[in-house]
Amino acid sequence: MTGVLQGKTAIVTGAGQGVGRAIAEGLAAEGANVVVNDIGVTLTGEAENANAAEEVAESIRSNGGSAIGNAESVSDWDAVQRMVAAAMDTFGGLDLVVNNAGILRDTIFHKMDPDQFRAVIDVHLLGSFHLSRAAAGVFRNQKSGSMVHMTSTSGLIGNFGQANYMAAKMGIVGLSRGIALDMQRYNVRSNCIAPLAWSRMVSSIPTETEADKDRVAKLKRMTPEKIAPMVAYLGSDLSSHISGQVFSVRNNEIFLFSQPRPVRSLHRGEGWTASTIADMAPAFAPHLTPLERSADVISWDPV
Image 1: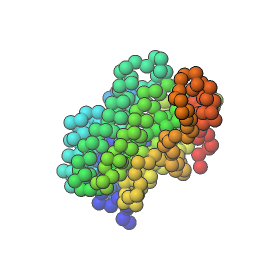
Image 2 (image 1 turned 90 degrees about the horizontal axis):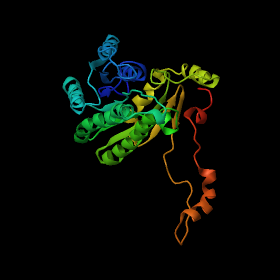
Image 3 (image 1 turned 120 degrees about the horizontal axis):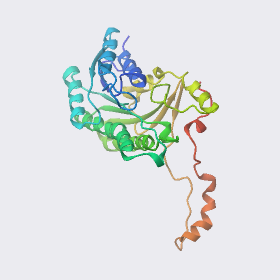
Image 4 (image 1 turned 30 degrees about the vertical axis):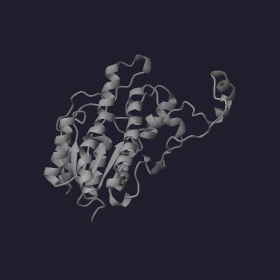
């Protein structure tokens, strides 16, 4: 059976386990050649298994797929150039990049130090820029290509103790939109997915209350393998008309997210002062976005 990605080559970062591994294996099952990238660290960035990427690649090959392992760091510009070169040298091309690599440094904001903020930005946001930029020249020259970036409902909606992660994930949405606009003339597409699945990236969710424990129990029912088909779709020619969008996948559900647009306006011919704004501000009240977490907005049980 020929898959929708037959003959295409993909790079998947952070693919040593969890969502990234499921994506890499899913793309391979659809016929893609896969560069499995992972530096083999823990969720907080400490060395854990330097062979993680090659182990996943070997598993793909043992199941009849085509893959190589790669242990370069996405936060290193030169390393990402080598990653793209490895795809080109091994498989003769590159068609899809999946920016999935990430770490966490969860801390309540008033206790967060600059290193905790910078580390998360470097891997999530800067790493996504690095690989996307490294692939952009290839995609521009061949006038085709797809980029899929992992954002998060923690950034799109909100969560406690994750200001650094939220900033990175919302930055990725802006990055993706910018790529989509700048590269549409070259038939290059860029989209985001906010994956809702049980993985080590969400295993750090605190479970201090019964509500939190119930939430985690529901998350554990959502396997990372459910994310792969959406990535395969966005990486294939089937989605040639879709770019600059934000999706989420949760078990058997797929969501399309809205993006910021004006929802209410006020006009005053004489201009404004702080006091006149205060007089008119109640008109905004019904349209203000409440301070909610993702679990408050997507509150129903997974389908």
